[in-house]
Length: 335
Ligand code: NAD
Ligand code: MG
Image (cartoon, rainbow, N blue to C red; front, top):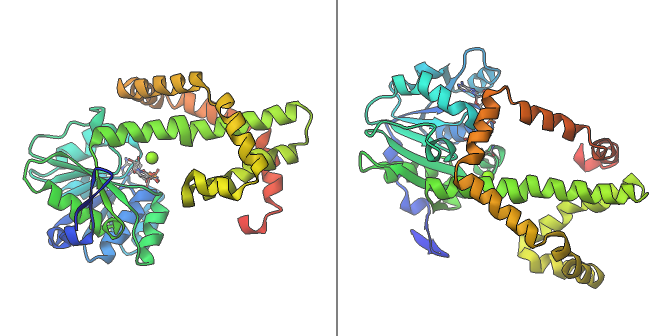
């Protein structure tokens, strides 16, 4: 039954009434990582699912072959009771203005898997439309594979607008429909999900981790050590360590490593991540909260993704990449 974990309200299958989705036309826009998982899980739960895509989309055939009805975005929105928007965040506002808003029926439910466009007011739905979020805490492929194994992926759930008074019922039913309530649906807000999600990926998960690996690799190779050693010590072993942390926290990891490694860990860690690093993280958070990051990201997107593409290319040309390509060839389990 609905309970609390560390102050957060949590819902399980028993708290969700899947029958609230029965007779409702559900449209999932996009058939990428999240889209295919939501659509197929809902369909296998007996729901009426339509996929909305651009004409000529490369995903069209795959969705049809999976037995789904596919329509062009605007057509798929017409008459839908629930519209789940699973297209890239930077495209959502334009697609909303062109294809969704003009076709969204009164009293429909508009849903998202990330709060970005609602929280940063890129999309402002009419007052009579309910707005909710089901944000799985795993890539779409895990949402699908867990479901097929009879398990589920925990999801964040939030309601932004509740015009009908039924938004929570529908949000929880949708979360159960994709299998999320088998694990847990954890209550949050659009603001909290959006700001923490962006912070995590920037400061720690994507930005933080890659800079840490890259800088360590550079220090070793610039000091004359073999790239092979630098790659293994700074990149390859990252997963081994993170897996231990993921399974049992810092303690399990530190239990598994040598005393030498543990001593060095306490000794060196705070010299790498300093008070200045913490200040930089606080500034990153402030830029997310103020909307500065969102404005810059969307402006780059409108500018043909100049920043994104330049950095993608520079990163692909870093010396760590060919070293990795060579060494991963030796690891049969990666093939
Ligand atoms: P994706 O890039 O994997 O897939 C996007 C899909 O949208 C593709 O099928 C593409 O063909 C389609 N598309 C593009 N333009 C379209 C248009 N104009 N009309 C209709 N369809 C269009 O995207 P994703 O990673 O699944 O992300 C979707 C949403 O889910 C985002 O809001 C993202 O933040 C959120 N999310 C993603 C993950 C993840 O693991 N990838 C996790 C949680 C939340
Ligand atoms: Mg995230």
